[in-house]
Image 1: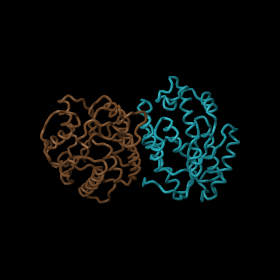
Image 2: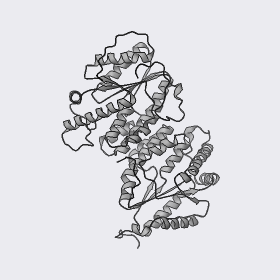
Image 3: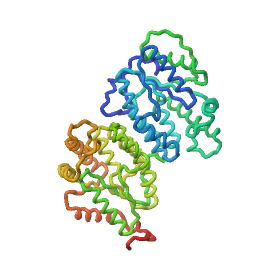
Image 4: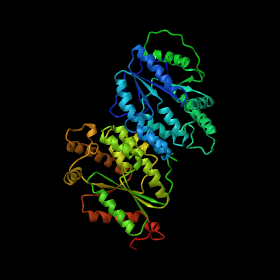
Length: 246
Length: 234
């Protein structure tokens, strides 16, 4: 992954009814990572870069669907849904954006930047005890992206960035719904470590690029654009700094 | 936890009815519920699509025609999961007879009729146990359609399958869609071992047959209230 040029799209499984993946011309680029890993910063930088080059882009992210986005936001405020129901609710949110944003945009030869994709959703479900086989099957409707980048940041650094930004750690990102120890900082690091482990396991299956995101935004952005360039069929030559950890 | 559930024996029993709109199944299951509660059994009645949590999204999606076959399937599955985990399963664990007006097979039939992959849908609902008895109220398509057209004035958008652009006219679209749903039910008869009932007969006759079958399938006395709830005639 990361170097192919013209690849025809495919679904992980049987996909969606009435969608012919061979008609999808654009590129789907996914940025994964925890809160505080710099995802949105990187997406903004990527978008600027792409638009300056003249490529039309579209964006998706979690809880952004018209259908259930605001309702999901609301139920997250109270811990009232079971992991299974949550999982399905998020899948609905994803499917809505897949069909109404990703697919039309790809059909129109746009570059779709996904601020997280099914991998975060799957990892979250799995740490909460949902059957991995079942989750996999549910997301077999998803399109295989052209590239997936996982912004890896150490839990300690993540916590510091969250403190700097919000002054506190997020309830869900600390996995407070599934842990009984009262210490939020411990919960956060433990939860983040488990999520990272899952991401590394998924990396072997889905072949993400792991990006060392313990750095400042610019070098990360240079890495990302260097890896994305070949996908675009651009003729730009640019030295590729090799900083990835894995 | 939502792992694929082994068919572990639960103290309660689950009875479901399935069938086309206009098959008369809601009337029949209502009578079953009344019979059981008046006889002094622990009964819980549940309907398809009634959970409060997800309802707002479902409503919005339907009203604004936002739903695709896939999101239609997922949002209904979300809704059902909530109801299943918070009501149906606990009731079964507590030893109730749970009576369901439509169950997961309604989703299997409708979603497949909309073009979703059958295996995908079945896997999606694999967290839910199959009922102890499922009655399929079987009527020829023409009979069901006739009952609907005389009993109701207006068909809703998704109910009529208008989202698939099968026909301009809602009723015509409904006919095509219901035809597909009918075929799905017929295929599921053997797949899930439904008990088929001839729903063209007089309602009273059907109800008698249903009650006889239930008495045969379920040892009812086990489900009698130990202490009669106040106000029940008995």
